Image (cartoon, rainbow, N blue to C red; front, side, top):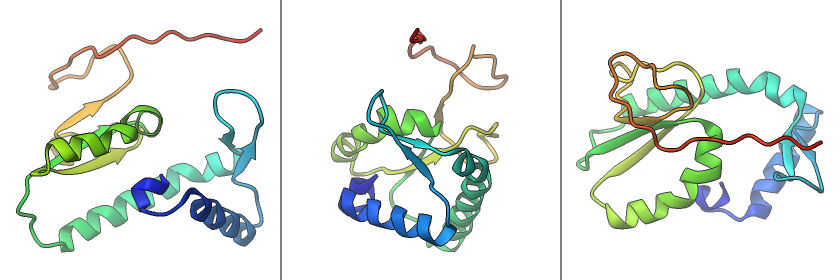
Amino acid sequence: MAKELNVTPAAIGQQVKLLEEWLEISLFERRSSGVSRLVLTKEALQGLPDITRGFESLSQGLNRLKPVDLNPILTVAVSPAFAAKWLLMRIDDFQTSHPEWDLRLDTNIRTLDYLAESIDIGVRYGKGNWEGLEKSLLMTESVFTQR
């Protein structure tokens, strides 16, 4: 995220700390083991859907005010987890290879109307039973539990 915002990871950490102080709650559990060292707290998870909708609404409003871009826009819908763990680290390569495209990400887990929301392509989890959409299996998933 720091690279995407053009700031240092320390700057992101400082902003999170200030937000936690202002809210008077912790947003992340800091863990020393496991795959992810930062995990959202129960309180943060409860507020996340409303905050996500708010950012989506703000983005849509700003897009309506912004002059028409000369470059074509490619809007990609993915889950926040897929974006964070796979897609974000590959965006720079795409932008370097295709500078003529403006890439927009729609990161959420809600049901989408691809036509109404001008989404060009999406990556979703599931069995592929999405009426009216062309589907391609990208990968399968294996789930492991620790005993």
